[in-house]
Image (cartoon, rainbow, N blue to C red; front, side, top):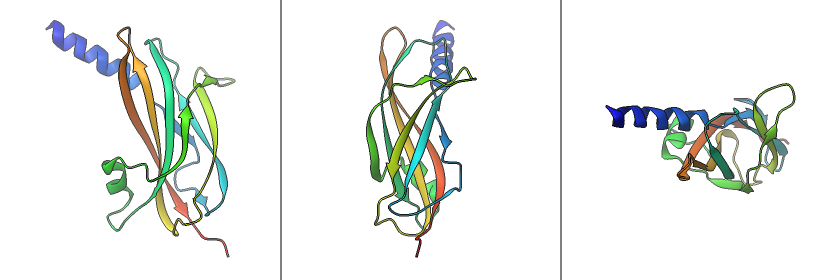
Length: 143
C-alpha cells in the first residue's frame, strides 16, 4: 500500500511540473524565415524541482497528420536548445520564459508540430525527467 501511495505522489508531482506552450496559439499561421516568440509557461508548484533546459523544435506533419509526429516524439528542426530559467509571470502565479525562434526557410507549407522538450530534476532525490509539450501550427509560404 505504501508503494502505491509513493507512486501516486510521484505522478502527481511530475504532472505539477508540466510546461505549457502559451504562444503561439494552436493553428496559428507562420511562414518560413519568420521569427516568432514561443512562450513556455510552468505552473508554480510546491513540489521541489529544478528546471535545467528546454529544446524547441518544429517538424512538418506527414500524411498521417500531426498526431503521428507528436506520438513519435520528434523535435525535427531544432530552433532552440539551452537553459530554462522561468520567472514569475506578472498577475499570475505561473512561471514563464519567452524564446524568439525562426521558422527554417526550407519548411514546406502545411501543418507542422512545434514541440518543447523540458528537462528538469524532480524531488529531493533529484530524479531526472523529460516532458514534451506540442502545438500544431500552419506553415504558409508568403509570395
